[in-house]
Amino acid sequence: MNLELRHLKVVCAIAETGSVTKAASQLGLAQPALTAQLQRIERTLGGPLFDRDRRGARPTALGELVLSRARVLLPAMKGLQDEAARLAAGGDHDTLSRYRIGAVGGPVVAHLVHRLSAAQPEAQISTHASYYISELSGMVMAGKLDYAQVGVCGDALPSAEYGLVWQTIGMDAVCVLMPDDHPQAKNLSVDLAELADEQWVAGAGDGCFGDCFAAACARAGFAPRRVLESDVRNCVDMVELGLAIGLCQPTFRPPAGLTSRPLRGAPLRWRLVLGWHPDSPAARSAPKLMDHAQEAYQEILARNEHYTQWMQTLPGAGGNSHLAAA
Image (tube, rainbow, N blue to C red; front, side):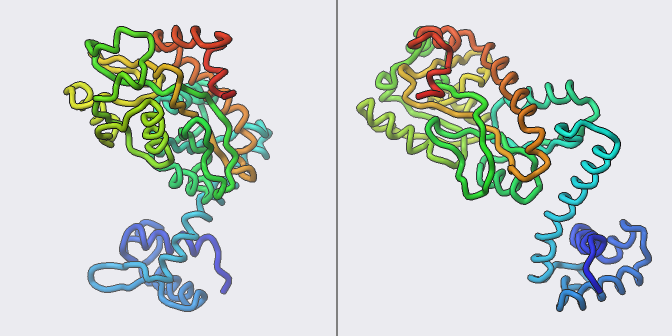
């Protein structure tokens, strides 16, 4: 017997339901028929895929291997079928019918989805959140996501080991999140050296930002007292409670009582990028999605009056274009 996609669907159904009986019901098959089919699949693959007892069915090591491949192949085949059907019907060759977008925090994705929904009301759009660029890159490589929108230190790009194409949405100077009544809040920008006695809080994630922050503090003549790491909500709470001041992007909208100011001289920069696999169907739609992402970014940035005012004081008064060029 040759292994087919329908056999992989059987294996996935058993793993997801934890039971041959439940999987049979889900697939609309009789339980004996599904059992016989599973036995044929196991003979083809050379061993049992599940340990089965009164508690249900649990994948063996061989079963986990098959499942890991099936969970890549089945969505990829569904995407191929959808794209083929759209093209056969005369659809736009450069427009996807389904967008699966992963992101590491920030408001850009919400505005991107809003613009994409308006441009393609019929498109299926889903999002996935993660703190880790490596996780999102791996999901794009495996065909589980079409795009990954992430952030990296200004001079960096995500690792090339996943073979993805990365393009810049925008470049920001990192800002300080502080209470409205903080002594530095009255200034258009903040000198990092003036914050040597502060405690800090920043969002979780991977990459080199922690090291870059420590290096920027060292150049300013001090070592940070303590840097707490947490999710965005807890970071905001800590700043509101006066436990620390935070690091944030200028696209972040502070709640009432808090404000953000860019660090003078932009010693830390944050690059927002969008990534995709160059050989995937998503590559054809990437230019249009980049346009949506860049428009969304500029729209969000324009809400921060202090930041846009500060950008006009930079050399050349060309906004943040010099940050990207630096």
